[in-house]
Image 1: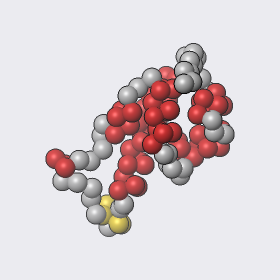
Image 2: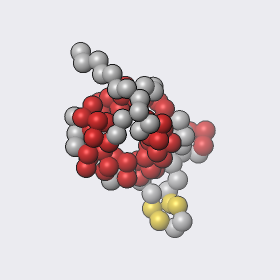
Image 3: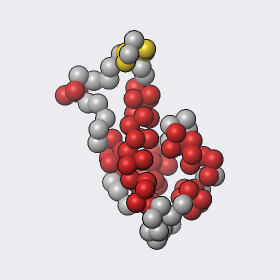
Image 4: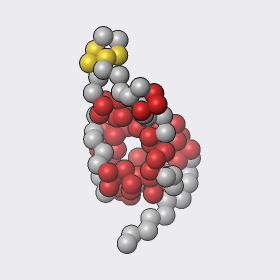
Length: 99
């Protein structure tokens, strides 16, 4: 599956898929669920490495710069996406169930 087919499965343009990859585009909850369906993973997959209460929460600064929660989660989602993406572009068949 390439970016064009992935975008079609999500109902977005190739440019929007690229903005998700780069972390510049926001992903709403329903879109995240759709991505998980298309990628055949549980939606929690995107948050497996996210900071939690046991980690002391979200840092206030990184390298002296203020960091927001959305910045932390966005970068982790992009990183997780990059981990699974190469296998998807290798020719897997996309099957969508539209309810």
